[in-house]
Length: 209
Image 1 (cartoon, rainbow, N blue to C red):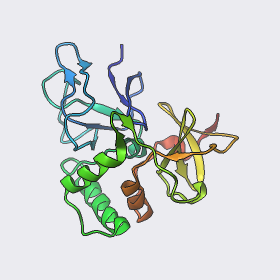
Image 2: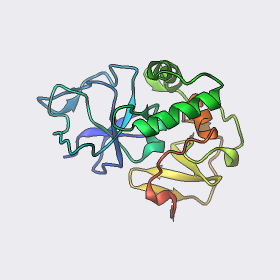
Image 3: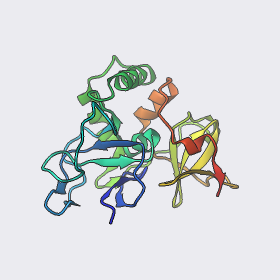
């Protein structure tokens, strides 16, 4: 049975067989004896996105009293949920994200803790996901931005909205109706300033849903 450690663009953590291309964490939120989640869904404001392979290290997932391994379809999903690149295992990407954050938000290059504090206010409304009004028309949003319309989550690529699932992305015949921004606004501005998140391969060749 799959563990409950796969993350949706809305930040929910569910159980599904698909693993995804990135891992990450929000602190220790599981019981290693049962490998199940506790009631809390984060214990730190530092929500990070990590690579799945680093220096040949191996971990048994959710088996020790250490950080809880979460998994994401791709980096766009992780950013939408409110995570940022890890400065340890993804230093080059994290520095590129910080530089784009500074350029897009008109600030000096921030410390990780400063980004975490801002993201904490932008990704959450209590225990619920905070959605935001679109600052631009849908077709002008940058690649990797994500929106929500009804029950569907969508990633933008080349001005087109592709429907998200744990299996990847699919084209839709109808444009999302009354979409709201999932990606935190500060992260969106980093995307507008040039940061390019890694998208699942299906974003390049989506099937029709």
